[in-house]
Amino acid sequence: MTDNSKPLDPQKIPRHVAIIMDGNGRWAQRRGFHRVRGHVAGAESVRVVTRLARQLGISYLTLFAFSEENWQRPGMEIRVLMALLRRYLHRELSEMRDNQIALKAIGDLSQLPEAVQRDLEQTIAATAAGARMDLTLALSYGGRSEIVHAVQSLAREVAAGLLTPEDIDAARFARHLYTAGMPDPDLIIRTSGEYRLSNFLLWQSAYTELYVTETLWPDFRENEFLTALEIYQQRQRRFGLTQEQIEALNGKEPRD
Ligand code: FPP
Image 1 (cartoon, protein in one colour):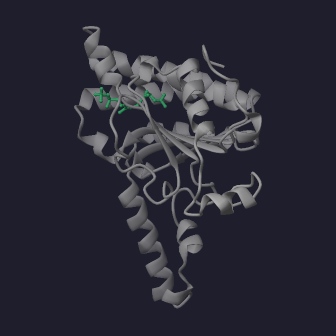
Image 2: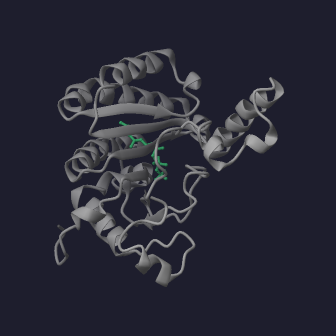
């Protein structure tokens, strides 16, 4: 519960929350620090938000940790981000295991440095039994590339005579995305006040509620997360139906 606010409704906890973690650089620069200090503070927000998501019963938490476009950043910043990611994986392994959190990764992981790929593989394997929450890191991830990759994979199946073009529908298409098997996000949070998706989960966000806060990612901690969830709970999700149709469903979500 945040100050002056109602407690969260346990019946309306989103199943899948995805976050565009933005504003690390600005957070640091406003304090006269180098940008990388913002990433260090941002890694702490990752810990805090993951722990709270797990406590609240969120089943899927997906974090946009490194985009395809981020490869164009200065080499030193990329190296720091990769080192922070490795440190995070080492430090959080026991907490993930103790809390039944399964680590996953989406994106073009083959682009990551070998040491990062190895640590990721090891952490994914070591946490695979975690049944309470999937923590998915989007790394070297781009939504358009993900869609192109899915199209290529389906085209190969058609060319091999395993499918006809008419066999392709939205459900089959989704099974060829990196997120196969995951529900679409109910809520996407973006920090630092930019109103855009920046190539994140483009297919999956068709009906997702969006929440943008001015708060910079390193300042996004328990209270900010709870506020985002309260605002989500006040939204009415209609999935293209009328108000009357929604009421007739009696609290059930139309796409269940
Ligand atoms: C955006 O801030 C953030 C990133 C590009 C990277 C996110 C990384 C972390 C939160 C830390 C490490 C991650 C893990 C999973 C431990 P920005 O640099 O674009 O900020 P700016 O827009 O203010 O420049």
